[in-house]
Length: 300
Ligand code: KIV
Image 1: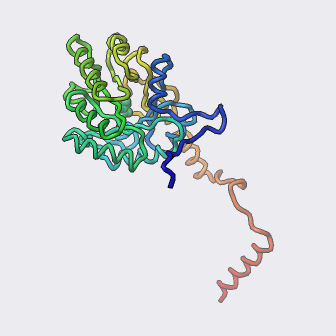
Image 2: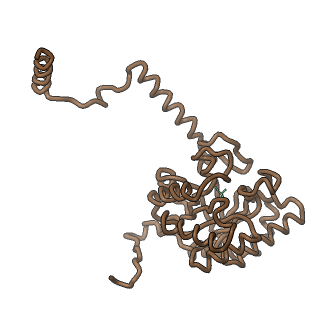
Image 3: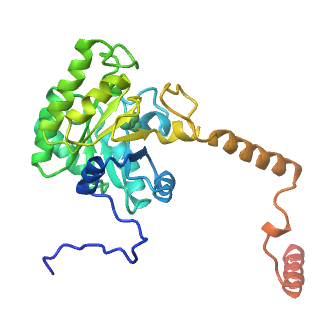
């Protein structure tokens, strides 16, 4: 077996090149906005791939958008791994980040490393994401030292929303904004390759982004971040639970899906579906022989 790692070489100069950590860092340096979206299965990942996104996050928001939980808290590692593995199969070029679910990394460095390794080995993720500063920065450091790239997440951290007073914007006082800054710097210091800012004032993000060397991806953090992320189901109008103020809708796909299935139901009930074009034919002679055979078997 060759010791040379496999390097995939683009077939033509037009073929999209896989996203890597150095390319992501380069994008920040060049001021090229980074487009990130969540995906939770094969079709949503294929959509992200075809749309040319840079980074796909298998977010624990999937707990709510695809698994129907009331929050992100109950989702298990096994459930997240199944979603992430399906997304992996739909992707070629975007960087794939798996969200470590609540309770799967906070306990100890060993627990954090073991969970992160499962996302890489079993689901094929390129990196993992975890929430908050404080002890999470220590866990991030341990995972990075184990050779796994980590994305941080500060501001509104849904896994601990109750402790933050609910799903509300963070960093709206000088003291709380400084806490966001300390958390972000701690995660950068721990070796995170990128960080998500969720639901913080645009002016706070604007002040912090130039002070961070790593790319900052915003969701509800205004236009000054190095990139943006949206939840797939919010972006396309698939999820009809609470949609945060920052989630711009670029489609109304659920309405289209309901209309399509309702048309199908109507046509089934009126026998308009299936039409001749949806049916298979049989040679006339074969059919006659078949009918004779049926008659004989009924008579005998
Ligand atoms: O789970 C998720 O979708 C996220 C994004 C909102 C960043 O963490």
